[in-house]
Length: 280
Image 1 (cartoon, rainbow, N blue to C red):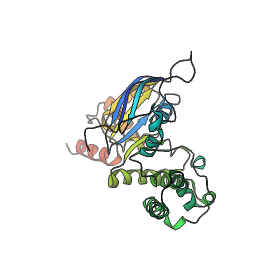
Image 2: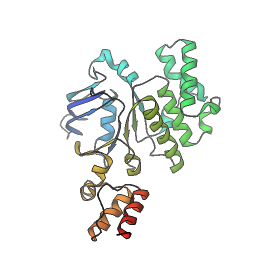
Image 3: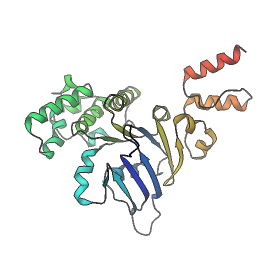
């Protein structure tokens, strides 16, 4: 991981209509290559607007955004930015356009004018990465929600982006589907060094990230590692957000006088710390 950011947001504001309150207010942040960043926020906080700004779907009304050094407000760079920063939306049905899985993955490549032989190789590789090779000839409407989202990921992945932006892409899935999709994203991050910006309202998903940003009323309210952010239980609740179950339990036990350390996130960590207390 280098020190040069692949995403640089500098004093960005965004307003949907002139005369209305800004959705984002003077926001600044950077994302390093290979980082897995989770973004949390209550409904209406501005996190989905930020996702669309990062992909160039919206343009800032103030400040600027650089994606791999390219300014999103430069019309000449729009297509290149969208190749560098792929976007996965909440509902996979909104991204699936073909009647066969393989043809759907090919859609973006055809628009890019990728040569046929290279296209075949990219499609095969993308389907292999998301473990959908055996369903290449399936009809998307026959797939489960998790499988559809994996097809949507494959379609973006075939375009070989450096950054994957997922805007609540597990929100419409059952627990099994959420686990499938998150596992794919972590594998891409771990094995291919892909930068992931993971926007979610599931605390347990955010707990697996390298870093968390909490957005509230268009501003960054908290930033840090999962342990740092989720140890601030009272502050998170002020922001109308929850924390992972074990972080909440640890906070309650500390308030009852049990000397537990901050930063507990998992059942195994809680079990270890309780055992230490019992063995004293």
